[in-house]
Image 1 (cartoon, rainbow, N blue to C red):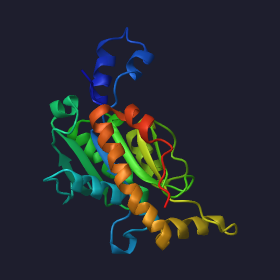
Image 2: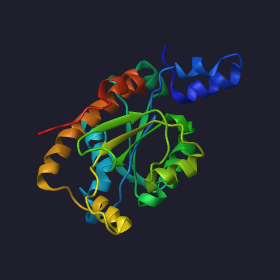
Image 3: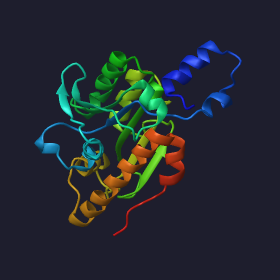
Length: 234
């Protein structure tokens, strides 16, 4: 039977004879899906908010799921309860969706609040966010890694105390401006997609939802094998 990340951590503490390789062979089933972005109409549909768009699409794909403002979590949140999820997820009885409303640079505050409330292990997080190092429309799913210069991820890593948690990066392409690099990056991520790129993004969001859905049913590794490197081309 598959275990959630929090159950893996408990098993590790109770069974010292388990090797690291044995534990990492367990199926990783997310319990908290976080989409990164900035709140407010000013930032809607910008490149930096693609994580929000994926979470919204994921919620719509599960009947009866609502995303509502939650002051305790400093964000907009909801819970999935569905027979589409794995047996292990059903035993835990919920998977939480979260859009932090702290603004990007403080996303970790909201994630920490949810982890503490539900008593989840950091390894049970799956974070969805934009990545300039990937072409627009390309997905990359990993079990762990650094922040890669992304301020939202820097905040989450700082607040949960580890970088060992899954993440789904959605490509937004890089800026072509060479001068004043920092300002060019800010303008790029806070800008909206060109019409042709918007078509690609609208097509890749359902693919990202499918990748998350498979992670919930069969584990992150299975989803990695199927979706890593996949891209939308129109």
